[in-house]
Image (cartoon, rainbow, N blue to C red):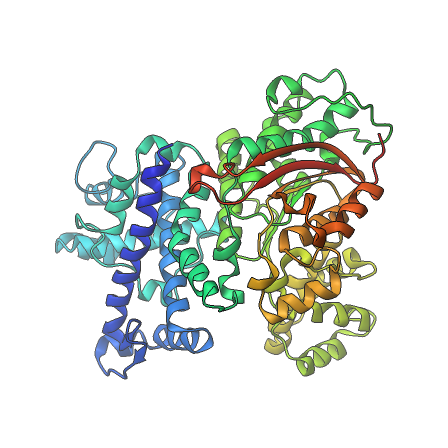
Length: 573
């Protein structure tokens, strides 16, 4: 994979999208660059009034720049997803390029010749009118929107239904030589699109300029805000480090339970230690293995865990369809504060499922288990009213107290530790609840259900926990985050990565394994002395690889002094 090319391409694509979307918005009186909104009265504006009002509301709720960033990235996501799928043969026709090397994309050429995917819901009269009048740009946009909406059925996390302000600001000139679609097709080697890792690398490089801006402001003593935490803390993990962590946690559990397994032939980074562990999780079948990445990013670790699990299922002679279904429903879980990264992680897992089982999108239509943390926005008063309507036996005082932990969930992420009794039963009851036509209850219920589902993930214990946690020292933390970690993680409060060392051990079941890469400072600085003692006294260091300063050389050289390691929870050799 040509990472140098990707590193140049992604920021250029981001800037071009921002420029094109900002130019498009001026037609509706919205000046993203000047941060002004002008009232314009025209036929076009009146026709798009609901979408324009929705866009204005979004700007008022966040900011001009944050809204522009969101829309630009939404379109970037959609286009790179289409490109990956067309190159790998997962679509019936190519929507962005021509397989024969022609100027027009295949989807448009085929529409011109009267060939159209029958599964696409499209205004045929409108399409024929555009084509007969040679309005190819408009015909192409109509085809793309229809395709996005078709894909929404099987992958709603990646392809939202396009009927909102994002459609309003769909980039113009998609058939021109300077279009974002042409840039995507020509800016990245086609061979590179055959590796699902490209999704994570593109995201890493796409946010690189924003990351630089965040750290420049940090030097001026501007704390990292909730909206900027993802850009400040996300770091794509080199593949060999992912393999070391997954093979020596997930792979190790399988080998301990199946000493004669041939799995280790597929694990070049697996370390066989001399110590014979007396205790470890008993696993009778692959379906009992549970694996979580609580800082999932774009899903790199989960994707490799998927591959290793497929080897395990193949060893046990499972049908491929069943193996894919079990992996996505029973084995793999992820949490992430960034909605966009979580969508990419789910998409990457779906594409891996397609690799093994090409009919996945048509036959299974499963949404992988990577959830984005969500802030509770329902007011205390509305929450009490909702509880009264639903009944105190279901929405208990304990549950409400735990819901309040999520007011800043996008700041705290999976460091939150809910303590709700019978959370699985509550989740099941809420999922089955019929709220009739009460719109207030429906909206509140949707949000509560979403957060209770997060609680379900956050309270579970897993056979294996593996992650590359966020790195943020106390000087970069905003007041809300700093207060939280001082209260809940007093022995590791100096940096988020250390807080996650403690949290990941609580995610892990007794005698299970936790794998991580982080900064090596926890091994010797006095501020981590209590943390070190806790680890040494209570847990077992199975393997540790002191990597030094160049572990992340692929993404910019000396990023941090790093160490990768595997701990066994409550383990004794």
